[in-house]
Structure formats: structure tokens, C-alpha cells
Amino acid sequence: MEKLNQAITGICSFGKYPICLDIDNINANFAILGAPYDSSVGFMPGSRLGPRRIREASTQYGRGNSGFYNYETNEQLLESPGIVDCGDADIQAGQHEFSHKNIEMSVRKILRRGVIPVILGGDHSVTIAVGRALEELKGKVSIVQFDCHLDFSDHIGDFYESPGSPMRRLSEMNHIDKITQIGIRGMGSSKRTDFDDARTYGTLITSKEVHSLGAVEVAALIPESEKYYITIDIDGFDMSIAPGTCAPYPGGLLFDEVIDIISEICKKGDIVGFDLVEVAPQIDPSGITARLGALVVINTIAQILKYKRIRLQSSGGYSYGER
Image (cartoon, rainbow, N blue to C red; front, side, top):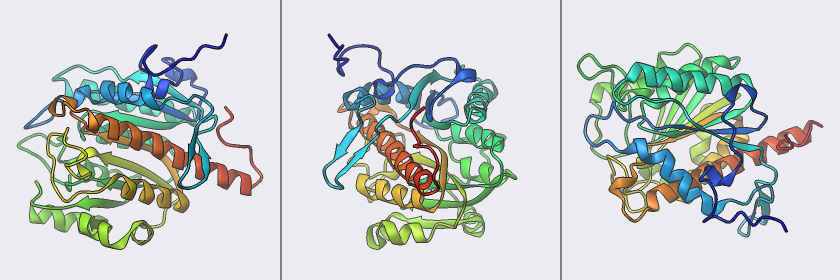
């Protein structure tokens, strides 16, 4: 008799996909990697618990190789996706350099295998470590950030790698191209000079502009690139659907808006990886924030896979996902 492998049974790997702890020998299209580090947070920690709770929430949506039928679009998504869960990068609380180095090296190994890394944070500083690892790819990588906050601060005292600094640090990396920041709103944590610097380097799109323009027009504002890396701070979403984060703010993005924009980005170029950060589940007893995070990751993988298959089929290549 075939094992049912339902959501309530077994080990909580992401989406109940296979576990592969030997990163040097991954044979997959997507590798889930937890980065449960939040020791650089200045106010409210807790996102170190994000990867574990996101995984737990994701088990309800585990469909194996059969994938999902999307009634709204009449599509079968995530068939034979080639997803593995690589567990977590090795982290030591309070040891920023040690933790970031291990996140970076884990992502570098995933990229060397030709696999797309999917990172579950952790605070937003982990994107700095991932950004360094993107050096493994040939050519420039453009960044698309979904976030309430600018995250373009230079430093706090002598500390240059806080959750408020990842976009500033990425902008200083030679292999990083333009940065597009989507969902920015309200009385943020950055200074006017930080906003001036961010506008000089890239494109800023407010949450109100997303609401009024729609996904197609928002995507048109994103500079053309062959390669994109997407970083999703859960506080980019409205606080009514994502209360479990250290800096929630009203007037934010909605689930469909973000997924539709990501779908449009997939049409523009290759997504070489993405992260979802700042889920702090202990702040949200309802669990909706971790569930939202899981669904964002699942749907983002589905869109990446869909458009990679379209590109490869149109060029006569193999069917992406059959690995």
C-alpha cells in the first residue's frame, strides 16, 4: 500500500519535499536553506524561529511531484519541481561573522551545483551573506526587494551589517547591478540622505504606487536584467496579514500583488535565487504570518519553475524540473 505521507505525519521538511543535508552533492532545481540568525536585531528578536515555523506551516501544502492545480489560471503548477530541503546553515547566537560566513558558504555550494537557493530567514542581515555568495554567478545580478523599509542605512555605531543595512551593503558589491525596492512606505527607519542614495542607485516604488499601478506597470519600472535575485521582507506585506514581524506597518502589500509582480519579473529574466526574511512567529499566536511566508515561497518557486520551463521549451531544451 502506498504511504499517504499526509501533512500531520513525518518530519517537517519544507513542503514535505526530500531532505538533502549533503549540499556538495545536491541533485535538484531548488534548495531550501534556513538561516535562523537574528542576533543583529536592535529591537525585537525572534526571526531565528522563522525557518522552523515556515517549514511546519508548509507541510499542509505538500503535494510531492503531483503539484497543484490553480483554478484561477487553469494551470498545473509545481509538477516534478525538483525541490530539496537542505536544513539550516550552522548558526551561533551572538557570533555575527561565524553565522554569516556559514550562510554564505552554504549558498555558494548550492550555486556551484547549478541549483537555485531559497533562503528562509532570519533577520534581513542574512541577505548580505547571500549577496556575497551571488559572486559565484557569471555576470551582474539585479536585486528586487519587497519591504516596508529602505534598509539602506550605512551603519549603527561601528556595526555595518544590521537588518537596516542589507541594500546598502549589496549596492557596494561589484557583482550587484541595480536595486529595485518595492513596498516602501510610512515613517521609515532611514534618513533622508539614505533615501537620496537609494534613488541614485536604483528604483523606489511605494506601496501606494503598487496599489494604483498594478503588477504589469510596476514590473515595467524594474530595470531590464538577465539575472534577478528577489529578497522578501515579510513586513512588506500589510500588518493585517503579517503581524508576526518586528516592525509591522499598515498600508502594505497584499499577497496577490506580490505574487503577480514576481510572475512579471520571471518573464523579464532568470530568477537566480530568493529569500524570505523577518518572520517572527512568537509575536503572532495565530500563525498566519508563518503560513503567509510558506505560501509566498511555494508560489514564488511555482512562478520561477513555470517560466524556466517556458523558456527552455521554446528554445528546444529539456523540460526543467525533471532532475
